[in-house]
Image: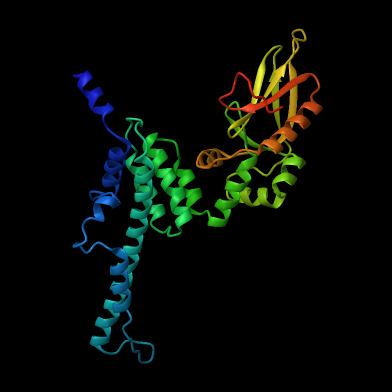
Length: 316
């Protein structure tokens, strides 16, 4: 019996899991956009319905001494209010389905995902957040969140949803740009408080402060990040698809320590950064590695593309 269950789990695709999770949260069967587009005879097009409601809502209302005086006028007023509410709900539904369609498109290229179900409360909170998101760029971001959570539940916390809900497109774009400088080392994410990196990327402290206000980065730039490396041991600073390897030469039993000041990422920032491609250019990474090496003469520093751990094509 257990083997049969495992077989059933194995054939559940990411898009099937998405459809089930969405349907369980919004109370109706979610149909992917490519299926809906074949139903031309159905009154499905929200834009057309919203347009009709908007036109029907333009009914003149007359007041006398600040009050509605005729029952007919009251009826028209109620009709107008109902039309406005219906129009708003249609827009919300449109936003929800556009985000879901984008997530469906992302997952349609995936073949495997966790068999752990997506938390229903998380899904409800997600849709309560995206119903007011009409900006296409932000919808793309939310779609990545949904796709990521379907693939691996508990990837994005409720706090992350709340933070993203209050994030403007400008702030999201700024965070994506600043993420070029983000380093991952031993599971920690941070931005080196380094004048060369800031100058190269044209990042200002005001940008860090703004992202601190958004709850994505800590603007306290006096936080130290220590690299304690045992003799013949290694540590890594990962910039996207490139790594700096820090190696301690054999010098007895003494640990070698390198220290840099950093702006740490918050847990929310760490979760959102997974949605962006990031990393320094080859030239910027090399220059930063040379500076790091110059300040830590006892350490050997090498830069290379990730996936080339044999260092056959060292950048430095």
